[in-house]
Image 1 (tube, helix red, strand yellow):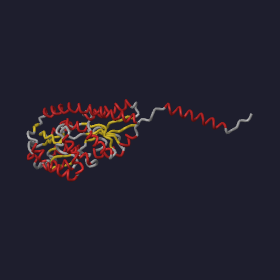
Image 2: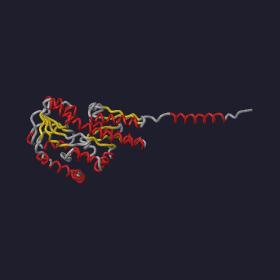
Image 3: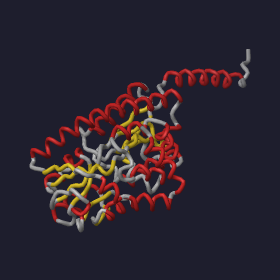
Image 4: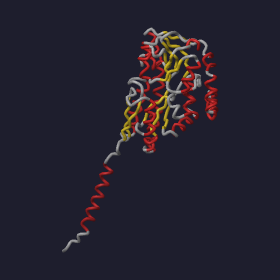
Length: 333
């Protein structure tokens, strides 16, 4: 009996197709290895919270998404990291909203001095409908904000003397983050604002290139700035939220199930960070006090607040569409 040659390849093709389908079913889904940016050192509240976020995502997605946190800003300064997350070159990050202003103008509202009356006020605003408005603005720039960290209240510190009134800032050179609002804020108080990379501040304080800077207790302590700038004055002029932000391209590659897992992990990380932050503020305060830092309360902050009137007026003149947002934040209870 003669076998028709045309039947042989068809059978082999059928067997190969079935075998291929079975192999595809047997193989696990390819893992997404996410890289995450963080400016803070290991052990810092934000770092611990981000690493917990990464672990929770890895475990609950069963390895389909496997984030890794790179601490100490080793992947670049924040402005560079923002651009990398927007482009998808990095997958996630913890960003302070201060340097975000040049890219997402609405976030400049969060940098207005004394826009929040307390850290709790800031959390209430950002966890609600107003926070969602900011998230929508970030998404327009390819950043998905999933939750909000705290960064405490920022105050001025310097190498010269306590600051109790705006007059005490006259002529002093202060490092500020790279945002025109901070430059204007410092200038109207009588200081000389100097935008500078965070990593350059310690040496600049030590050599006299700078007289001071402004930051929260944990950053003041962990950076070692307290070693060279011994006067910390509780102006508490800025209370700026931070985000856990995901690259939009990375976010859209996730299934609905994994998006829910990642979002919940970010919310859990924020809850942890806020608790760790409050504990760290107390610990950092104790450390700098023991090192001989002179901390002074500012008895009358109204002099500082009143000085901000031209900053607000100029901001609203340049951004009239954001005035209602400012009013809504100030009215929120």
